[in-house]
Length: 174
Image 1 (cartoon, rainbow, N blue to C red):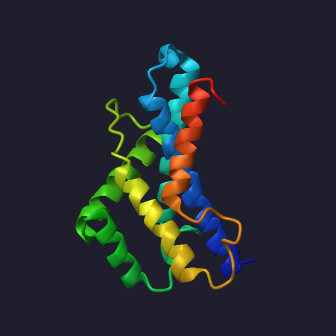
Image 2 (tube, rainbow, N blue to C red; image 1 turned 45 degrees about the vertical axis):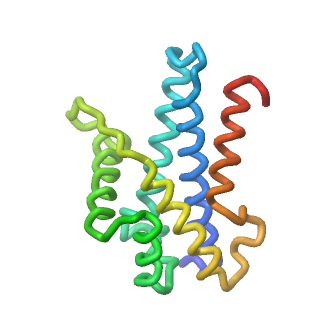
């Protein structure tokens, strides 16, 4: 059964939030100077956060046939991409090159374990900004069915809240 517009918007928005949360948690661990950094549990948690963020981001931006690719929810793609590239200070070619690098990492080291030995994790600032842009576009331009009635209002604040929460947990304050 095909998804309703409301369900599609909501799930795409949730993927945006999941991406941002995992990016925030990954960054919080990376910036932490705790002695446990050498413990396998924290190494695995740190790596898992980036891998999940990459998987979720790819659903939104690289898997055009996928159920939650941004083109399935955005009704004015030219306007969205113009706004997206302006927010990223980028262009189509640069964004496509970046998206390919994320997709290669996902395919080589997350979804499969190919024979490559050198891991090049893409810089995630573009993933973060593009996800924030998509989430806010969905809220402000696409939500004609109240899909985000209980969702965070701003993606950047949601990311900051997740980062702050993770830092408090890592410092033993939560």
